[in-house]
Image (cartoon, rainbow, N blue to C red; front, side, top):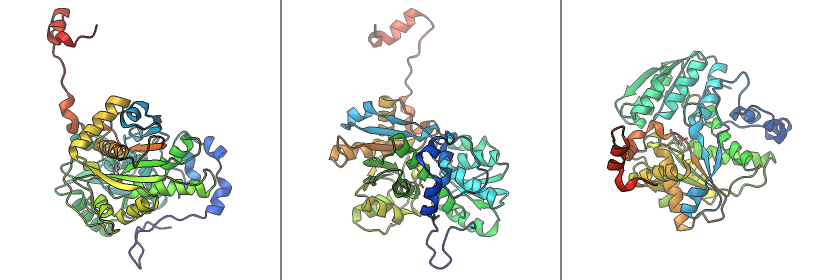
Length: 392
Ligand SMILES: Cc1ncc(COP(=O)(O)O)c(C=O)c1O
């Protein structure tokens, strides 16, 4: 094994492949159940050898969302709440695997190109693993993402440009510096971490695959790996056949994969992102082609929602289920709402919405919710200001 992401001959992305026959001998439901209460209970399904770098990622709640379900007309709706990972996003899953590999390969420095969530996760895991880290982000990302990365003391580089510019810069730097770039030369390993979200969902549902999954897409990698994870469990006979419809969610202001889906092609044309959902604002998605195939072959779809719908989605999730998701979560709830209204997702479908990061990092999007009643510390002032709003 070596740190490499593209095939030398055809330049296609490399992917971890396994000997599933051999794997099946070491993996069982009982063994998984007796493992750690983290994503590392699925270690036998991941491409790692040595000690893992673990800051407590995974086994996040799968919440039965009855309040949101009744708003949307869905009887069996679940939220996979990945806001509750250590750095508040699903990126801890991919980074935990990639940094473990970085250490196995002997890198002393790791780096990444990030829209914000990956940045914090890489910086946190590097701190834990005593590695140096260089984290590259677009200079206009949210303040919450900037601070929640900087606290771990990486070398934080804010690039004046879009995420796609940041990614291009990093693709040049990887040729020059002997660093483990989490989402470039370590990408095949990074990708595999996303499968653990699917493993957890299946285990939490009593070892079965859901009927429908709605998940956000930036590069499209998470979406493809949720599918791969579900297929693997079936192949290893830990679940029955997979009949899951995979629904991909993007913001209308950055929806190259949805555009291709709607045009009926597998060719993704790059776009210039313009949306409040900055974490998934990738104009040229590396795994768009593969994500499109999953959406098609699973009998799912790809849908986009406007910035207004994203904000409505964030508020709806918070005000029905008590979960404050970031803008990418608003995208998922907005798309879920559309799919339920159109009948694509039906009342009785066991549906899982992947909520991949916390709203505390994108507070700007919903700043208008801050409308406190300002009162003097007296009962008179309280009753005068609130007037008819006081519930007796
Ligand atoms: C919160 C959140 N959700 C989803 C994604 C999508 O990830 P992918 O690039 O694997 O499609 C990202 C990517 O940065 C993200 O930050």
